[in-house]
Image (cartoon, rainbow, N blue to C red; front, side, top):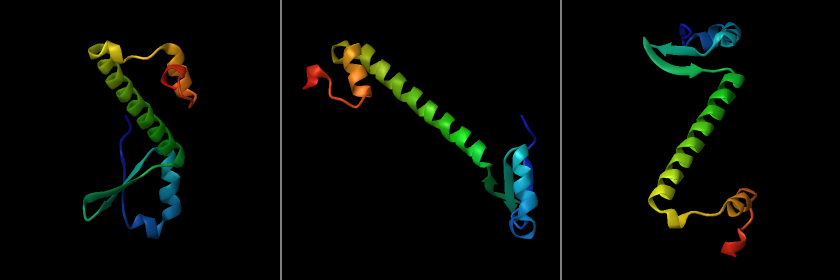
Length: 95
């Protein structure tokens, strides 16, 4: 784990170029009046974090669906119907 980079919020105005260059070493935590006010990320770090969050949300949904399937096996669908749903089509059995 990296040591957090901490800068005063005034760095945004006084030397924003230096502040942005620090993003290559990870996020920068901006402090205002000795309290954390914001966190700056590089675009690539933000995209990685957003992708990871999306993966975790999909995993959570998959776990919920698995739990429902275990509790209600009569509510499951066939593999072929699932493929059709994922392709954005209505499964044949459903109309």
